[in-house]
View 1 (tube, rainbow, N blue to C red):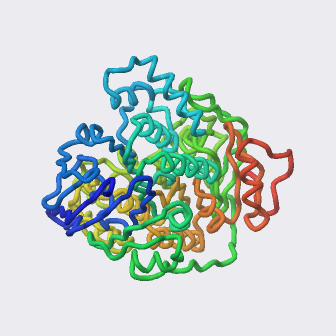
View 2: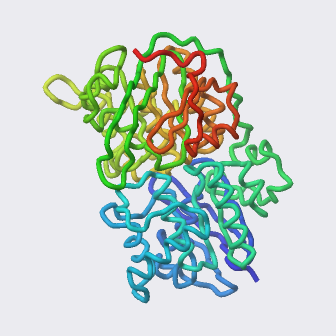
View 3: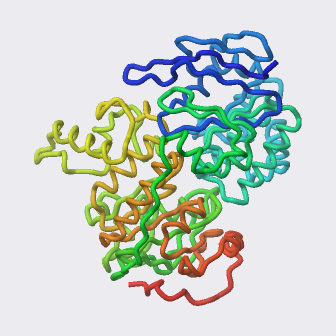
Length: 508
């Protein structure tokens, strides 16, 4: 008898068939991967199990009994918990209040607060239950979702891209948690695009392509290449690396010091950072160490910085807003897709207007034909799977929306691009493409600053690395001279006072 069994699950949306007669079997205590490229139907299938989406056809069995999971409340009654890729937290409420909402009224808020603290300590997840959610980074919000799911004592735990914004150390801690849960009998459905993770953690894997099952394998006996072929029909393309040809300093922060905007933020302390034209600088660090504050100051969302503490091609811009900086050639990919990178109810074509002015004629008229053509070009170039330019942003899978937002900013041909978590939640093929596009942008003379918690990503594309910890930025290291162990130590703020390595550049 299986803990969970799906038979012939189908779901049709107006523009696409998300699931086509999908069957899946999950044993008690099994960690089972669901693998597929963006738009393959993974998230839809998980939402059907959790009751957030109703299938058009098919059957669901839990512990051998056929059930109808009509809504998430039904799912929780069957001891099914899910951590969504797009988080379901209320920004104006605290962490504990958000967790309390999903636990019923049997516990008091102080009881829930204590439970969150205890569970966070037990599994090595740094969470303050009294913090309002709007003050948390994406990585910190993900920790909240994971702890909330664990507190429901699930028999089936669904994790949708749980490590997308976790550091390698946090990933290993999470793996230990999941193995412990599995040993206690919890069954885990694990969605990830990280093939090495799946091979290290999971004992079974169902592969989806175009909404259909293309294989059920033991990932421990597969290679990353064979899994990739099952998933996308080919191995991901290899990146072509050219030696960087850095030019003049394009974006620089000198002595940037900013007090936190709220009591839960991070103070920025004397940050010196320079990015040259024609190079990629990577910023590593554990989520919540000042990344949000630094990005806001550099992108123009926070204009409290002294004007001369931030320069763009030698011009003081510390007090300039985001729109002015964009007109000077600085573009930004935020880490939060829905709500910042894109307006959920607006179409992809209308979301162009967040950062692009070309589709607006003099007098403020929208050039709808041009908007449609530009959007179609971005969708084709970055293989964005959606119902077309008029599809609402919220209708896209997380990976496809990420590809669209990154593509929109790269297509603008920026002089400086700041990208936060650029490949969050995208499949192996799209990850390779986005990284290749960032390298091509660098080779064309753009200055690129990438903030990522994926060390593999930074080591693959960055020419230089810095680490941010507790609101301070480390000296610069040429990537070939850096090691993962050293960067891991620096993430705790443990760097010696040493000069920046050759190639770091002087602040303009």
